[in-house]
Structure formats: C-alpha cells, structure tokens
Length: 103
Image (cartoon, rainbow, N blue to C red; front, side, top):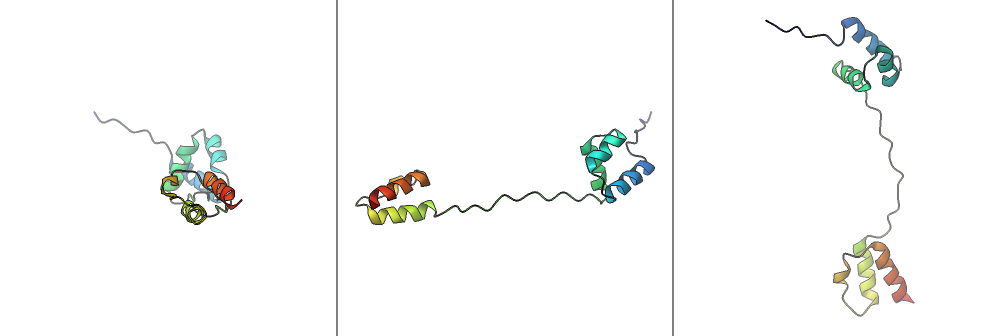
C-alpha cells in the first residue's frame, strides 16, 4: 500500500507566489495571504530560483585605536620594568598605565 504524499504547493500557487515576489511583494505578506509560514514560502522561492536574500546591514566603522601590542611597546619605553605580564590586561588599563607613566 503506497502512501500518497500531499502536495504543499500546486503549480498555480507556485506561479502565483513567484509572480507576487518578483513584483516586489514581501515574503511575509505572501506567506500571510496563503496561510503558510514565512520559512516555507522563502524555501519554495529558493527552490524556484527567484529568492534573493536581503543584504545584511553593515555595522558602523569603528576606530579601534592602537592594538594591545602597540600599547605595551609604548608602555615598555616609559617604565623601568618588563611589561610581558600585562598581556592579559585590557587596552583601557594599559592606556591608564601609559597616562600615569607620562605624568
């Protein structure tokens, strides 16, 4: 006895969602209109070769300042002791030591 598989998307429904998507309808709107999950509709559009993932927003460029290694080299030039043991310190702590040593 063969089990018949239920078809999730008919050819007409597939054509309809592809057309709606290519016309600019958001996937969320299409999914709500046909009573399916966004994930299901997105997967179908991917299988049909029409889905284009939205570009992820890029974070703002941050000025990270000097590296920890650069700060330690600067500190080493200012103090009469080795700074090897300060590798675990934060950049802020090393910067504070540099400021203190310069005064």
